[in-house]
Image (cartoon, rainbow over all chains, first blue to last red; front, side, top):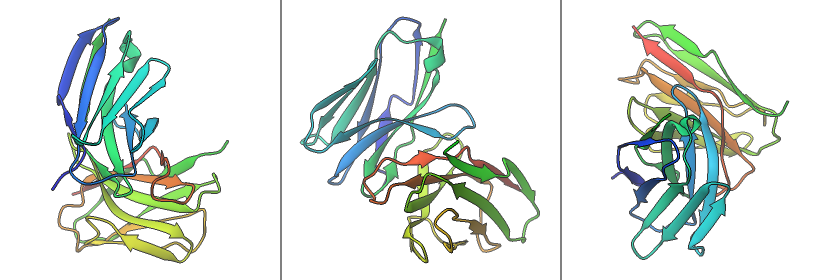
Length: 107
Length: 113
């Protein structure tokens, strides 16, 4: 079974708007991490949230974790065209990635 | 510059041939990983190694082999036994624990003709 499933699969917004992506997983975790991937490139680590944390911030990013619902969300505020990419969540230690959310930010 | 490199960026091979993908890191990381990514999908773990001369199978190890003779290097061989080898292959490294942040290379796109 696939863990770390994101929704929506694709999201298109205007520059300046906020973007919210969700991730669900199936088994217990030590931490959950969000990554960004530009087309045809490697992944860039964005943020890590541990199983005993509920919310974390980094710049324009806000991540929440609800272990009772086995879900996480990534919020990007005041989006920019440069935020256009695919975003993946991954659960650890089992290193399971979701299929990702493809975000398009229109200028 | 510290980082993780993969070569080549694009690789073409004929069906039935083995091919080896290179992954090198100078981050002094103990752990290294190989993932496969198919179009529109997430990453799936092929193999990982937490220490030199030791490695473990991931979720989709069949048809692949690895070696870890040096801390800096973790080459992946895609054998002729791999039924659908055409994919984007990503290498990553981390400090050592399986819960640590992973740092990814730029990837190798393998096309088998």
